[in-house]
Length: 139
Image (cartoon, rainbow, N blue to C red; front, side):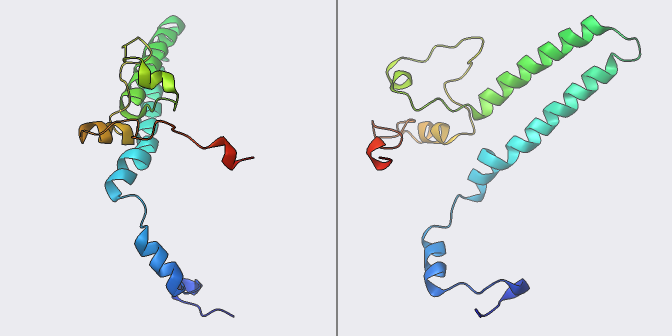
């Protein structure tokens, strides 16, 4: 029976401790920007949509609800992309210069690893031209 530690959890072995110290995972900033805030921003979008729908219920105006929800959905889509859009790992995106469209306002979102690399002066797509997994690893 392994020795139990705090809250009945098994105590980690020295190898597990060394591995955890060698690779501690993402920083708090990276976790907050890249993972945690996504949930809360999406919840905020849901709250805004609910307020918009509820504001048109008293004088029931279905065309206004549809138009307002369409506008909100588009603005939320653009807002989400401006913060967290990550382009696919396709060579086409690396070769072609970025063109702003109605659907894609930014090359990649502000709170993404690619944007951090761009701000630090590195290649945002990574230095390795063969991004993605090696197919021979799966065969």
